[in-house]
Length: 216
Image 1 (tube, rainbow, N blue to C red):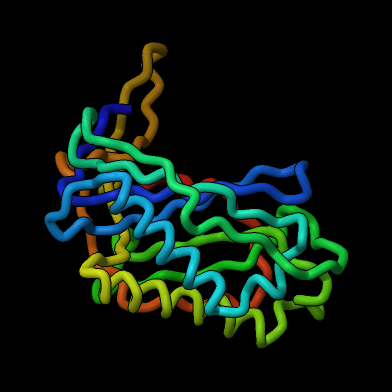
Image 2 (image 1 turned 180 degrees about the vertical axis):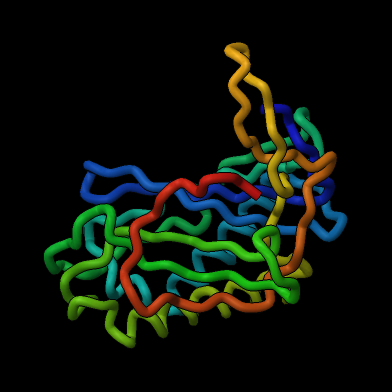
């Protein structure tokens, strides 16, 4: 897949573990608003995200085996743009209860001011415990997820950054394979399209993350 430039956009990969058995990662996109990516900027972004975790109260529903260990921040302007790893916002869950199966995830639905597949997104997080569930996520868990999302949007705005949805593909096209079979493939954009997120909402049912049929 060719590199698709996205000027002024930073990809933030949050990475962690669950009871030393499961590795997880979740991706956010942040507009640089003209700033150059440096280690200090990566630490600042990581710190903002980590503080939002703490302030939301969500850590109280995540297993003590759940960790958020590092943030990899990459400038997507070009293939040779900088990348930095930060541990400024590392976090640990604090609930000692039995952890739910690893595929059981709390989900946040992200929306922008525009409709359509290219202008919405989802974030999935594992590590919740039985304390957080009565078959569905407790109302307090949904509230905490929403609080994390809302706080993150506001805190990044305060820091003159924007949380957003990055679309690198648009629609599909028919591609002929070497055996002459024709299949649909996502159509890459010439340049990534970044749209600011205006709202994040915690989902009221547990989800299982599956790869989307087409990116973008």
